[in-house]
Image 1 (cartoon, helix red, strand yellow):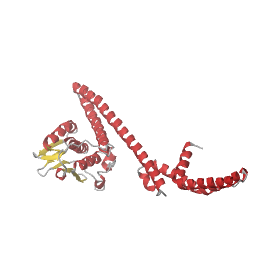
Image 2 (cartoon, helix red, strand yellow):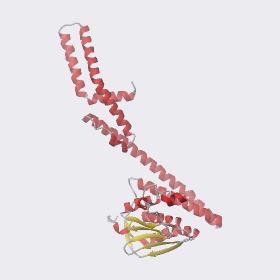
Image 3 (cartoon, helix red, strand yellow):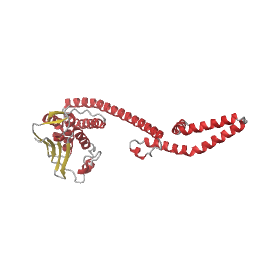
Image 4 (cartoon, one colour):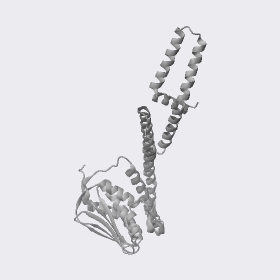
Amino acid sequence: MKKKEWQILLSYIRAHIGVALFLAGSAAVFAVVLFLSGLPAEPVRYAALLCAVGGVVCALPGYLQYRRRYKAAELALQGLPEAVDRLRAPSGAVEEACLCAMLAKSETDRQRQRIENADYFTMWIHQIKTPIAAMQLILREQDDARSRELLAELFRIDQYAEMALTYARLESPTTDLVLRRCAVEPIVRSVVRQYAGQFVRRHVALRCEIEPVCALTDEKWLAFILGQLLSNAVKYTENGTVTVRVTKELVLSVSDTGIGIAPEDLPRIFEKGFTGYNGRAGRKSTGLGMYLSRCAAEKLGHRISVQSAPGQGTTVSVDLRSVDLGVE
């Protein structure tokens, strides 16, 4: 018998330990009484064997049913957490305890594997950003048309790496949020400077209308959200204008005069992996930028919304007033 089968058998015996002890005790009393009565040993052994066979035959259907449920639980545990709802209710306290232990062990193993994968993923992204920075320094020294084109592509690679790192951080159970009241204008101008080369390269005008306001937010995560909005704006605008506004009412918006978004795509714009008509037509969209922006905004307590029409441009607004969190 395989090791797994022995484990199932022992688990079944433990689940019915009371009945097993009663039968064993009854057989012992039967054997002692017959022995003290002076009967020959052969009839005693024969009677005990018949009782044992009868007990096995009676217990076999219950064991087979227990074995099937045990196997079904193992298969379901391989698809946690989705498959847990398909498990049948345990028939007893012992089976329930065994199932809970299996669930806990499986979930612990999966959690450990997720943490290890996230750590490796994060380390790899940090390492890949080093050669990207080195190549950018080398290309800036040449300063010709080809090097500027390569710099633009390296900038996109660096942004994709940053997006992947943000994705790993957002999926992590602990996100490094540091909420404090800070000025919005320096954050906006810092991100705008990062994307200035992209605007020049695509001949897109950039306007900034920023009120000197402060908001309770995280500078790094707000900068990431704004970066994604600027990236989309410059990507889908040709020879137009992108406007970044910060109002006194603490609303940060990015407006463009680009191709706009189809009405049927607007309700799904924040879905994970959704690229829409524009993304499929140009094959330049990953479907993660807006999804990650929404996730980051929710963690910050901000609200993000989109208004758009085909051929009339797009406006994405981030309401910074919705923060209702304590200052760290």
